[in-house]
Image 1: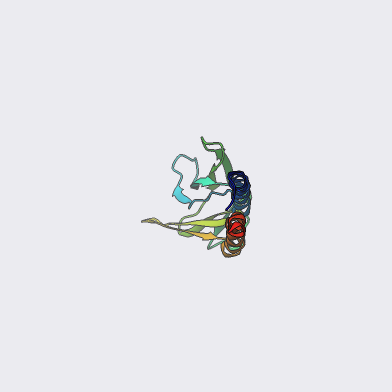
Image 2: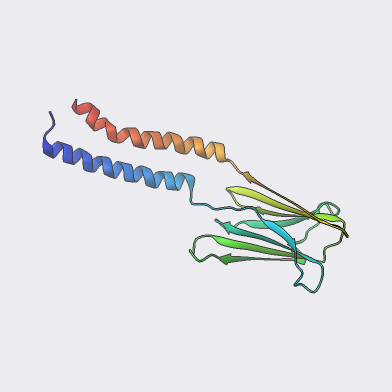
Length: 166
């Protein structure tokens, strides 16, 4: 039978190991945020333009505009992207405006960081506006598998002193 001192000692060691495991999980998974963009016609602008907004991203993503008609075109000179820090001071709101768009064309706003890639598509015609959005997680299976292995190790490790005492 273990003494009260041994039980307290191993309890403290177990708590330290569990906390270290929790920190390792946070580092392994990373702190991240991502959201699906909403693309709309920007009626406030002086020319025909589109506005792409996504409420939460972290770490800071890149934003690229693409066009179905003008494939391979570089829209960086006719777009303006800003990143606004949200009230919790962790995630940021992504706002990107594409200027000088043409009717009867499909445009895509692609927001991407090392965690996720989100796309908002919009087609504006004379009679209607069609939208579509999708989100893709990048490398989620690999990081989840690695982190799960370490999480199991960190959970089982604190139990070993108790198993050895019996």
